[in-house]
Length: 263
Image 1 (tube, rainbow, N blue to C red):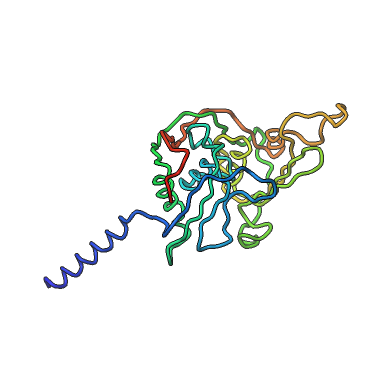
Image 2 (cartoon, helix red, strand yellow; image 1 turned 90 degrees about the vertical axis):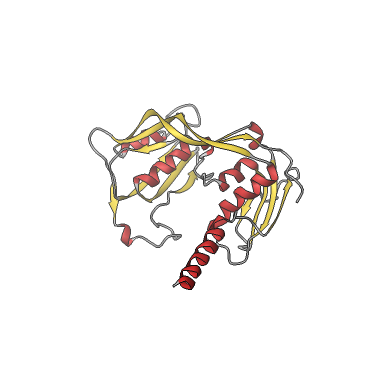
């Protein structure tokens, strides 16, 4: 019985030690990016699953990736810090540990950035301007769809994605089969502020938005554009945006070095 108990305790200790290990890349290079050259691709690539690579990427974008803040949804307001975080760019090449899941990249990136830039940060709640999405008077005018009959994730028409495109005259188009949570995420990106769902609508709906980003007249200064602004188009769907303030958890960069430590 004593031997069995000792083995159990040993296994528990090993497991605890493994989980307490700071997540990190096997080896990594972080350098100040050279001046931008037209035609040279910038941003992060998934071309090689064995290497996490970013070229000419602002430190703010790297931090947002590390802390799970969606750059694609324009959640920059959730990361506060000095202005140079947006302007100073870096090249990163980091080798993944053998057998490590890509889901661990954010945690490993946190470790790497903290080490190389000597970052000090904290999290806090701040009151920020926001919108609340509500059902307008008269009820919602949305077309429900059966999510179980939609294409698989990653294929055109799959649930959860508002595909964006453009038309002549500055008209933006967003179309897809989405929940209200998906829609508010999209709207948060467009308005660059939090958008809260207060509609009570739980289904998946076929959404087709065509709008202009601001009030515009025709090209010759005559007739108005054939579509309205995003809030106006939402009204046509029986939805409305109400201004409010809401507490938002933000990550605040207290200090960081512009020049990363040597590799």
